[in-house]
Image 1 (cartoon, rainbow, N blue to C red):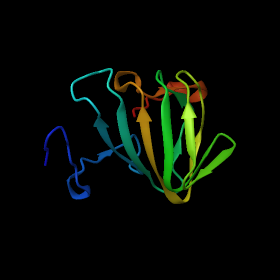
Image 2 (tube, rainbow, N blue to C red):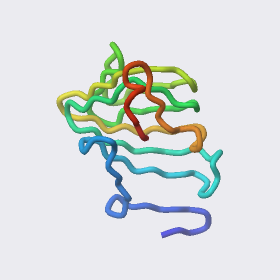
Image 3 (tube, one colour):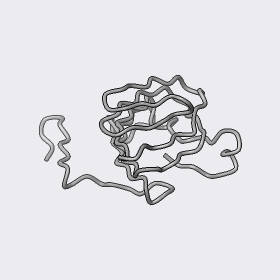
Image 4 (cartoon, helix red, strand yellow):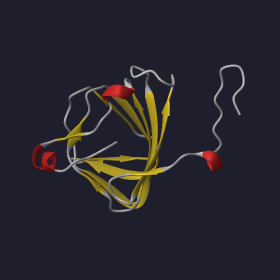
Length: 128
């Protein structure tokens, strides 16, 4: 229900989408609907053992680990950890831990958040 500039989305009404792999689900939210320069918030759930290839994004972003863990390159991030990534920075692969992982990501510009594969993974099409 939306009231006075609020858009309230309850858990049971969330529009979950499946990622490239069936072990990845996400829900996207634009802070300003219809504006490409709007920040975008993504809530992502990864099944245990999922692997996301090395990639980058053309916008800065913030990522918060809500639960579980993921290893990005050689660094493991767990519940409560934060990653701040500058546009164009390559990283990965991301390997999800045995309990799975749920993260909240905020991209500075929705229109520039597309996943861009890096290295050997650049031959695969990836979407975020």
